[in-house]
Image (cartoon, rainbow, N blue to C red; front, side, top):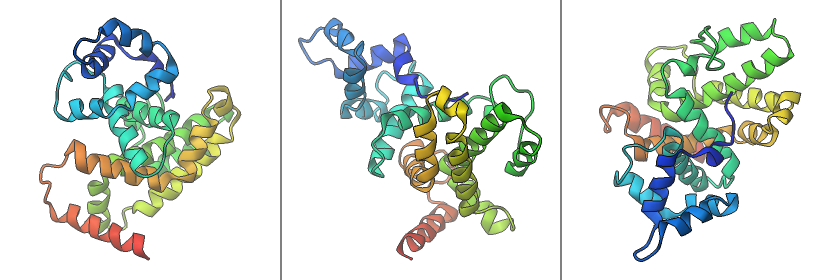
Length: 244
């Protein structure tokens, strides 16, 4: 279950990274540590540009948690696309950190043994799911669609170009958006305080996806050939689409 409480559960190594990055000469780390205990002040400190700079310079990041690593990058990327919502950044960072582990991206939750390789298989199980299962399946549909198109847009683009009729970005956006929207209306979303987050992800799925594309292209460099033709053509297609 992806939550939006990662900022309140930072590890000791994360706190040390924040303190070391932000502590000015002559300032005591104990003072900043007390400030970190206040949620609002902590949020403001996590937005400090020095954290991003240290992250990109790979300063003191060896023991940084995946959550904080992604949160700093996701927060910056979403703000670039005018999505200034810390809870949404927290949820998306938690999603990326969770799905980066093993085969977790293919499973509805960390305890599930069943793996889904295709969205259509999840949709099939929705037909016989009970209420609780429906919430988890719909949330996972949105999560997986966002994870795949957000971090691996060149994979999606390549499949569409060379292996038709593979689903394109509009397909993933429609499935992800619809299922986030439906999950947001479920009683369990209210119970877990995810209604507003899932609703925003449903309403602005494309913008969040593009923000993650921007983040992956600029900071993660996961593809082996940054100058690959597919990457260039995918960006050209996006430029054309945004002008139509």
